Length: 398
Image 1 (cartoon, helix red, strand yellow):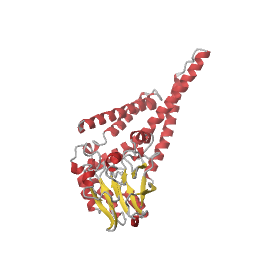
Image 2 (cartoon, rainbow, N blue to C red):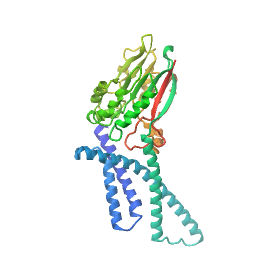
Image 3 (tube, rainbow, N blue to C red):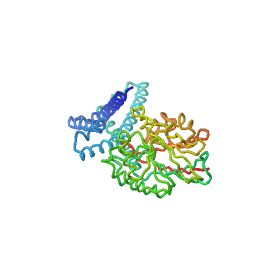
């Protein structure tokens, strides 16, 4: 399927879901809770505007002044997170209410004719259900937003890397992934992240894609905090799918100027001449399907050209998709990936777990290893529920 057609199908489906969700929220929160036409009209206008914000966030910068578009975009993302849990709460409470009503009517029918429920009682139950949904969803969304902005958890793992020289036993790699610098993640977040990463005293830092959601002009200052990362062997970066939305070539040049080493389908040696391993970096796995040329797409053969396959190797690849079919066959001892966010927040963590074979955490097959990060920032709604953000410290063992 052609990329524009695939995008239109995705956008159309997403828009339909958003509209239907807001229609349902209007019915439960406004239509069912009061008869006053002013209240209902206000609810209809509010739901329509909020639905429009969620659908049109990419168009706002073209239609409105930059500051206004930015403020409305932030509001849209905040509402998306709150609306997700509000919709879940309303659906759950509505389902429970209907089940209890059905059981009550069934029991009553066995004993006597079913009692007539007054309109006042229906309205009372609707208001009670709406109030409970607002309280429950507000609590969960508030926790998720707080968790999204708190420092990432540090997960430390140890991996026995085939072929690693004994002199490099204990070599540590700090992995950052899916930071998504953008309207909701700015310089303050980045400075705190750099400070936390430096405190781990890693030998090398890697960023496995989806660093930014915007142009160099918009986000260069926030991203430049990465130039303050400190490690013995430097910081390395590979592209994720969001870099292609934001200008992959412009960002590769900008990050190079900031002192990062960008690995686009190539490898470098890490360590001393007598004790080293190969750090291999590939572009995003989905880039070629999106029509990008081979030189800017996932190409592990090009990235490993000329290397001795008996040497220890660590592969940086944004998506875990190619681990079994590509990385293991090429003899990569360890692949570090991200992309999935571990679902980022409930219930999407369950969906991601069902869709992705390697959704988050450490996986092994033979002598090969894969670690999939839940991400260090967040994308879209500032929510982290049941899938906290993380910094990964990988210790390599000989």
